[in-house]
Image (cartoon, rainbow, N blue to C red; front, side):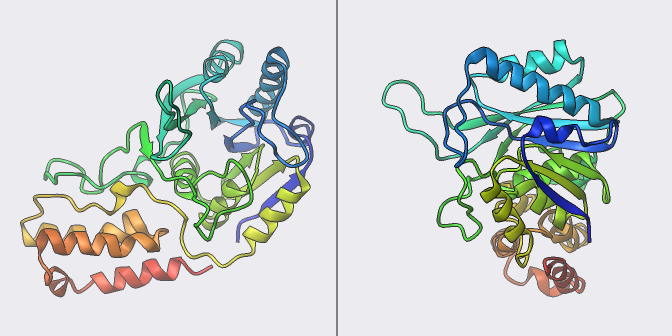
Length: 315
């Protein structure tokens, strides 16, 4: 089992206890300075104070990150441009991607357009960094032999549903992030046994995902109630991540040649759905709708792969 630890306290102070050049990946979801209530603190600082806070913790993040490391930072629209400037111009990190997390439900407006996305900035410590594209590919819409059967690059616009209040994995936290979204960040930018840091751990999603993906992880959290929540969550039985990119269950068109179709379908669950048990039935229905009800009868290995996927879901 990986080593997963959470520490209660101020992030900037706790950073001081982390050795320089020791962290492979940082996933940070800091307060957006929008006045949200986080139990024992309110997310509301003066403009200049918030920027100074942001630069302070990002400076520490740069210090502890390995030369091959990556930093992902979530941010709302009000401060995203200032965040980019700090990372790029002040700290001299290398910009890689501006990811848009699109969701279908959000704040409603009667004047102006309702927000339906958040942003994630991806910066690296150097031009030589870890990126495991094969681990985060998505199924192709149309299969072509000249393309990679393993799938396509997911791009920089991602659709993941919020963790709704009816979801059994919903925690009592105002800004809980979907596990499937964090899974993609972890798979892309770290390897097994790597060390991942979340300096604003919140509901513990990053730590929970790292636990299941065999990454070591450290979390910082200011609220002791959220620390307790996270420890409880880490001890729960794993039954699959609470969200999935809806493209992961799609079946490529034009898999008409039986040999190619067999090879692809034998691998789909292993490649795309091994941590998403709830999406397997959606995928199987899509296959039957596209290629017929008896399509799995000729695939001897399919049940073995499905059994393997189910076994990996056991905590």
